[in-house]
Every structure is written in structure tokens, then in C-alpha cells.
Amino acid sequence: MDARDSTNSSATIYDDEVFKMACDQFSVIADYLNIDEGDREWATYPKRAVAVTLPVHMDDGSTKAFQGYRVQHHIALGPTKGGTRFALSLSMGETAALAMWMSWKCALAQLPYGGAKGGVAVDPTKLSRNELEAVSRRYMQEMIPFVGPHTDIMGPDMGTNEQIMAWFMDTYSVYMGYAVNEIVTGKPVAIGGTEGRREATGRGVVYLIERAMSMLKLNPEKCTAIVQGFGNVGSVAALSLAYKSGVKVTGISDHTAAIYNPKGIDVKAAEQHVFKKGNLRAFAQDDHVDPKEFLTLPCDILIPAAVDRVITGKNAGQLKCRILAEAANGPTTPEADRILEKRWDEIFVIPDILCNAGGVIVSYFEWVQGLQAFLWTESEVTDKLFRILEHSFAQVIRRAKEHKISHRTAAMATGVERVIKAKQVRGLFP
Ligand code: GLU
Image 1 (tube, protein in one colour):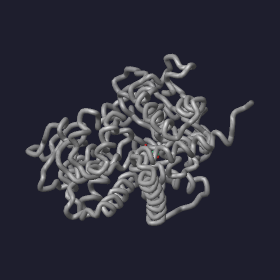
Image 2 (tube, protein in one colour; image 1 turned 30 degrees about the vertical axis):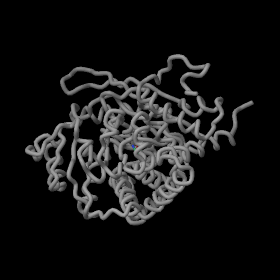
Image 3 (tube, rainbow, N blue to C red; image 1 turned 60 degrees about the horizontal axis):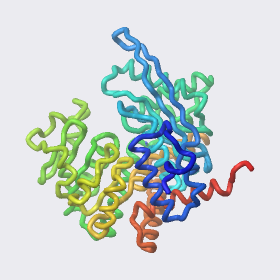
Image 4 (cartoon, rainbow, N blue to C red; image 1 turned 90 degrees about the horizontal axis):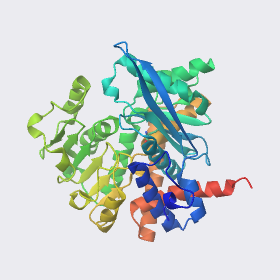
């Protein structure tokens, strides 16, 4: 039974399409694992959710109030951990869904965390640097009672970056009266960030793609890739595929343009272009294609690295890739999943909670280094990252094969099982 239909539930602050999707995904796993009805609601609804209003003086003299959220999904395994998203459409329900996915992701990688997510409903590209700093600092200030290095540790996500993490760290530290660099991850290396964090998610995505290519006996030099999203994750993945793995990148896109060229795209030039102009709108204009058709163009490796719910019941049957590497959180709807399950021998899915786990894994390394005042080199970080990913990948593939289930079911079941077990062992107050 769906957690949202059970006897206790009426309308909640989480009601939203993305939260519904996360609950639907959970129901599939709960049925597969035979989780007791009584444990289902408890496992899906967040431990705690905070909504704050952030009044900010704008450059034009006006005052604007932005909405901020933080959702902490569960604390059965340790403090909560998760990114901070700055996006205009952000809602409490979406934040709760993202926090739930963080829980399964952290548990799959065996990190000692529950999931969290937060953010501000704002388009960061429309703010000046001063306004962005004011929103960021006010957000952390409002969150001080609810976060802490042993309570809830923020990290970056869509629309935030190292500078914003630095403002968070500074705001928290000024309040405490000493430098607390373990309060956030994804900080600049200059203030206790770890080597290799910025590249971690994209690097992890490519590591897993290479593992999939070798399993499927695909020669990287003969493979093509299409990458949706050219932010921190998509751009690092595209660059690494093109210049390290030898894969031909034939498609890249962002929210302003979708570019496709079967002869290959100059990804370094695209990166330079975005660095100067902020987006891909004016890049390789002759190769622009309809963004709606972008994901169904022929390629060997398809990487959705942007927003949720882009692979749906409508386009899942038309995907022409051999590997689907889900670098974004929640890119595939449950309806699309049912279609992909039928196409299991055509499309090798690397599910999101495995595929994009590199980011939070290296965030964990950053947190550990902060707590212990250690300094690891980039190669130490990357080696440890690949070791965890290898272990998770092997577990997922083995479970999927043995039980004849999809990679997503295998990955989520492994994560969900660990959380439920911890909750059960700790128990409830009598
Ligand atoms: N935002 C990233 C994710 O969705 C990482 C979060 C973090 O580093 O805490 O996994």
C-alpha cells in the first residue's frame, strides 16, 4: 500500500508531484522487500522539515522575501546530509523527495548519514553577487538552530557552488565564534574543502559508465554520448568522457539550448563558452536541435544530468541508447521505469542513487577530514571514491542478476533495507 493512502494521511505539506513519485518508487521497493505496512509511513515521511522566510535588501532598494526549506529525512544512521538547491520552482514536497533519495543513496554507499535536502525558491542567475550573498547568508542564519556538524551537514546542489558554501560556513562560524569548516561540504579548498570534491559527481558518473561499457564489451572509442545539462555534473562528465575515456560526445544541452552533431562536439570550447557567456545559447548555433527530441537521438550513452522527470512514459520507449547513466536526481518516472524494465536487455540503467553518488561520497570525505583535521591528496580522495563506487556497483549488479530485478530495484532495495534495519534495531519509545 502507498504510504500516502494509509489511515493517518490527509493532505500534508509535502503534497507535490515529485514527492508522490518518490513515494511511488518506495512502494515498489517496500512490496519487493515485504516491508510491514506499519513501517512504511515512518520510512517515507521526513523526520523534520523547516520552512523559513528570508527577507533580503535588493540592489534597487526594494526588500524581497524568499522562501527557504530544509528537510531532514531520518537520523537512524547518523546526522543528515544533503545539498542545497537554489531553484525558482523549489517546493517543500520536492525538497522532501530529494531528501528521501539522499537517504537511499547514502545507505547504498554505506555512508553514516540520513538524507537531507534544502534550498531557496529563487533563480540565482537573476541575482547580483551582493543579493546572492545576502540570500545565502540569511538562509544559513535561519538554519543555525537546525543544523550542525553532528546534526545536519549541507552541501552543494543545483544552483549553488563553492562560493555559496563558503558564505554558509562563514555565517555559521561567525555565530559560533570559531571556524567550523565541517558544517558544510563542497567548500573551496582554501577554507577546508577537499581536493576533488568539485569533480567528484561527474568523475563518479564516468567511472560507472566505464564499468558498464566494459561489462557490455563496448569499445569506448566507438561509443557516442549525449549529455543533458552542462552544470557542474554534466560538464565534468562530458569533458572526462571526451578527453579521458575516448568517447565521442555528440550532444550537450542546458536550459537555453540543445546541441547535437554526429561528428562530435568540441566540449572544451563549449566549456570556455559557458565560462564567458554563462550558458550555451550562442554556442554552435548551426547544430541546435529541438530540446524535446534531444533525449531520443541515437547514442550509446545517454546522461540526463539536469532536472527530475525528463524520462517519462512518453519517451522511454523511444530512447536509442545502450547505457542510461542517471547523473541527475530522479530523472526517470516510475511509468518510464516500467517501460525500461521491459527493455532491460537493450538499455543498461545506472540508477541515480548509484550513478551520482560520487558527490556525496566525497562530501563525506570532506566532512571526515574537517572533523579530524586531516588533509588528503586528490589521488587519495579519488582512489577511495572509486573503491566505494566499485563495491556499490558490484552489489547492485549481483543482486539484480540473482533476483532478476532491475538495477533500480536492486540499488534502492539495498539502501532502503539498511535504513529500515537501523530504524528497527533502534526501535521506538514504548
Ligand atoms: N547534491 C548532491 C547530491 O544530490 C550532493 C550533496 C552533498 O554533497 O551533500 O547527491
